[in-house]
Image 1 (tube, one colour):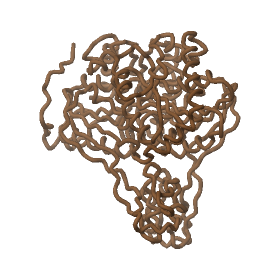
Image 2 (cartoon, each protein chain N blue to C red; image 1 turned 90 degrees about the vertical axis):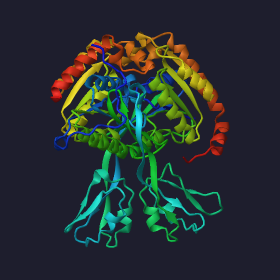
Image 3 (cartoon, helix red, strand yellow; image 1 turned 180 degrees about the horizontal axis):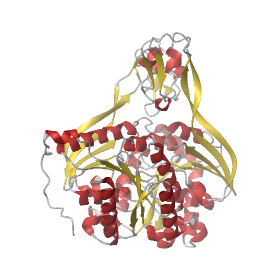
Image 4 (cartoon, rainbow over the protein chains, first blue to last red; image 1 turned 60 degrees about the vertical axis):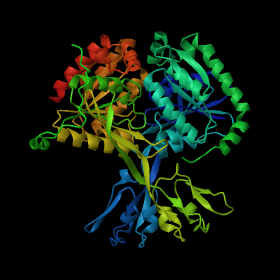
Length: 294
Length: 315
């Protein structure tokens, strides 16, 4: 079963939930850190690096001897990544999405594709957890292809947890799509509520079932609880607002390892997730019926 | 010195004398790398302290600034972010070329026996299938990916946006919001543009910060805050943008706060100060106000940070 941990708002505790849930589940767990712009799960686990591979996207390279500046390539490119200027063709690789249109359309066969690196995917090991993380190169804008490479490492069978990036745009979608269940982490504040609403709409557009974890419970107001009740969203776990938790987190310690009262909370979440696993065929039938396109 | 939030916003935005249009308006972009470090609370307070800065919420897929700045919307615009491929089922001959040329797995088997449909969530808007469909059965309409708004607030004009659910092209929407804020600032003769940036280091962040006068990195003294701050600092250096930095909730972990500042200083950042952990920050949010309007220890610290940032930007 694949469980994605997401949120609209950043900093609500996605990584905290993902890591502590991974540590509370029995058996071999795969944790995919898809927040490739700010991958943080590794900071909370004692990991050993197993493999690292460079991820690239295909970008065009022009053979100047064959090119006759017909400009078909720049006509088809929707991203303004290729332009005919005077006597030559200029490629702007950082704008290229790797669609391959220019290569296909070039009548002179003057374009071949080369790989431009955008980041790395690393596999790390921490006890019974295999952590797979993407790490975007600094200055690189294009995020979803790297997330898709991390997702491509998803193992068949067993429990897979996905730590998603914040937001509701293409990166979040790339991380969450194809999961069986989404845990939305929020906090009981107006910002938390607003962004939870956006995340719920997104997840429903994707046709995925979801539940809510409220972090820093007790710090704000009741509106997140009211919203969950009105929308029929199950609150799977509430993590109390406690300075000891904030301090443990700040030092890179896991909550289940350093705050004794939190341990049973995550064990209970783990049980709920295991119960869901037995219900996955049912969930998938539901997913099939749901509207997949937004 | 409480900030007055009396109703004094105009129904339309004032227009400055023509000569103001000649000067570029300084632009401060607040970013963090890690989400949830307090960017929006800091920006809202800066807006209240600056008075008459143009405010731009560039966290377009989880925009929150409007919840504390009480905007009244004057204009709403559709945001068109590229195109999307749509197969006309009546003309589809199911040759499968679209599926063969699509690099984004966006072409799916349709409901009919042998036709294809495009999944709009996967379509990257590249138009390659449109070009190569032998039956010319694929349309390529513009895609509306959200809305953007021009509003007035008690603290100055504000440009904000809402990215469509599961929509693409947030970077382009960020650029639209910034461009509009700049236009208003020039017309209005404003002294400052204040940008609430998105988390991360990818496309929307790059769109929010390129060409800015300076960035303020709001971070927190946690292992994640530190790790992501290093990446965002590298990003600012990469784009050659001057950086100031402040550590929010610094007293949660004073040693980490110290380490972050040393790292920042070593990389050329100006240290704009520290903000204490204060429950009033959440209370302000609950009351729909800025932190400095509510007051408290964090409010005092934010005033100090603002003062340093203002002098650093010479506004």
